[in-house]
Every structure is written in structure tokens, then in C-alpha cells.
Length: 170
Image 1 (cartoon, rainbow, N blue to C red):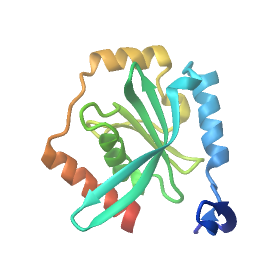
Image 2 (image 1 turned 90 degrees about the vertical axis):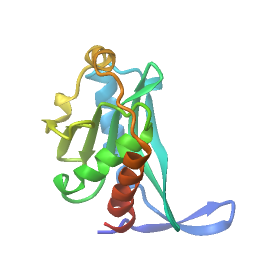
Image 3 (image 1 turned 180 degrees about the vertical axis):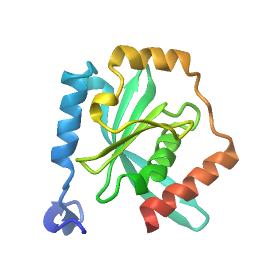
Image 4 (image 1 turned 60 degrees about the horizontal axis):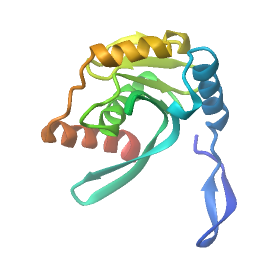
């Protein structure tokens, strides 16, 4: 189901914009990360843009929430309507493309009710609840123990195609 359109004022005049249907869920997740998992507000970035370019096409997409610790993305969370499991691979691609030199070790796909917490490198499930996310102190240990695995140019190209398929076509 597509988001409803509303009229809004912008630099170009009046235009049609989609209502941000996930704002309440995003706020709930951020509150949980701060209050229950100990992350600091300044470590949480919202609506982080991602630009995917494949030959002849450009896609503007985003990561809904990115937790950064010590200058490195640690957790990437994306919100989409529909089946969580069917969008996992697109979320892994987005997380890997956030910082191809040091992708976040954990990514999360959610529709606001269901969650899939994944290891960005191995694609393995780490849980299905927000409670399964590591606390800030645990995440700092994970970042120290899990050395970043940078993507090769060939891997970057493959991840861009995957994300383009999920966000641009799928």
C-alpha cells in the first residue's frame, strides 16, 4: 500500500510529498536504543541518504536509523512495509554500502511490528526482537573484535545492483 500524498511547500513551490508513515516507529526505536540499550542521542543518525548508481540509472534511498560508534557505523536499521524476511537482502546491501570500507556489523529490517536482526557480513540471523540488539557496551566490544571487512569494487557493484532491485524496482 502506497503512502498517502499531501501538499507541501518547498523551494520549487507546492508539490506532492509522501507522508512519513514510519516516523512513529522510527521514534519508538530511537527511544528504545537510548533508554534500554544505552546509546547516546548523538550516536543515532536518522534518514541517512544512500545513492546507488548502476549504468544509466541512479537511485536515491536511505537507511532509516544508523548507530555510529567511534566514527564507524555499528547498526543500520531500515523500515519498509510488508514482509520483513523478503526485504532482508536489500537491507544487508544498504548496510554494506553505508561504508564499504567498514560496514556496520549488524543490520535490522523491520516493518514496525516484526524485526529481523542480521549479521551484515554472514547474513545470519541474530534475533527477531529489538531486545536482541546488543547494548552499547557490547557493541563497542563487537566493533573491536570484528575487524571491518571492506568490500572490493566487484562486491560494491553487486551490492548496488541488489539494493537497486529491492528499492528501485521491488
